[in-house]
Image (cartoon, rainbow, N blue to C red):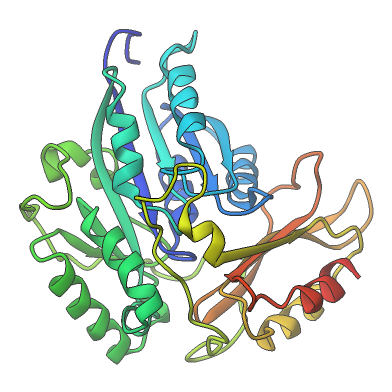
Amino acid sequence: MHGPRQRLPLTVVGGFLGAGKTTLLNHWLRHAGGLRIAVLVNDFGALNIDAGLMAAARDDTPAPAALMELMELTNGCACCQIGDDLGRALVQVIEAARPFDAVLIEASGVSDPWRIAQIGMAEPQLSLEGVIVLVDASSAAQQARDPLLADTLARQLRSADLVLLNKTDLASAAALAGARAWIEASAPGTPCLETTRGALPLALLSGLAPTMGAARPPEGAHTAAEGEGIPVRAARPPEGAHTVAEGEGIPASAQADAACHHDAQPHAPAHGALFQTWSARPQAVIPVATLRAWLRDMPPGVLRLKGLLRTGGAAPDEQWTEVQYAGRHGWLRKASAAPGPAGAGVVAIGLRGQLPEDALTRFFAG
C-alpha cells in the first residue's frame, strides 16, 4: 500500500451519456485484487444513480475485490459546477488516515474529462495516469453527425489517452465501421480498444502510465500504445441481463445534446441551460414485464434513463432491478444488492423542453 507521502495514481473515466463508464469502473473494482481505491462519481441530475449502482456492486462483490470508498459529486459538470467539491474530495482522499492506492473519477456524460483531469493535476500529491474515454459503438457514428452532439463528442474524444469503443456487441457492422472511422479522424493515433460491457483487460486498467506514457493535454501528439487496436470482446452479456429489444435494439426516440462550454461562468455552465433532468423515488412495485414493455415504447425526448427499482416481493425479500436506457438500447438486470436507505430511484435526461416529464411522472411516480 502506498505511504501517505507517495503520489497517488489518478485516472479519469469519461464519455457520453450511456457509453458504459460505470460498468467499466465496476469491472475494474471487481478485479482490483484488494487494492484500496477512492472512487469519485459525478452524475448530472438530482439523484446520483451511478453512485448507487457502484455501491450495490461493491456490497455484493466477494473478496479479494477493491476496498472502495465512494464519494458522490452530484448535479452538474464536474469541471464546472462541482469544481470546488471535487477539489475538496481529492484533499480528503490525500489526507485519509488509511492511505489509498489509487483514485478514480467518473465524469458525467456531459462534461469535459480533460478539464476534470486538470483539477486533479493541481494536487501535487496526485499523479495523473491518464484519461479513458468510452464511445458507444452502436450510436457514435449517428451522434457524431448531429450538429448539437458533435462538439461535445469530439471534445471528449480529444481528451483521451485511451479510447474504448464499447458496446461492440450491440453495433451493426456498418455502425462499428462508422465509429472506427470517426475515432480515427477525430483523434488520430490515440490507442483504441474494442470492448463489450467495459471488459478492458486488467493489465491495461492497472498499468495506464506504462501503456500510454505521461498524461498530456488533448492538443498534444498521442503515441500509439503497443498492441493498439487489439479487439477485446466479452463472451456474453452479464448474467441476469435481459435485452429489451432483439436484434438491432430500440430505435432512439431522441438524439440531442450540446457542448459544455467551459468559457461560461463556473457556476452557470451552458449545458445546465441546454439539458434537463427529471428524477423520482418510486414507492410502488413496478413488475419487470411492465418495465420491459415501457422501455420498448420509450416516450420521445428521453436521451438517457437509469435507475434502481423495486420490482417484486416485500421486506425483507424485496426484488430489485437495475434499469438502463441509452441511445438505441435499453435493458434490465436483477440488482446485485438492494439500494441504501434512500430506496428506489430513477433519473432521466434530455434536452430542455423536450423531456416528457408528465409521461415519466405518470409511469414512475403516478
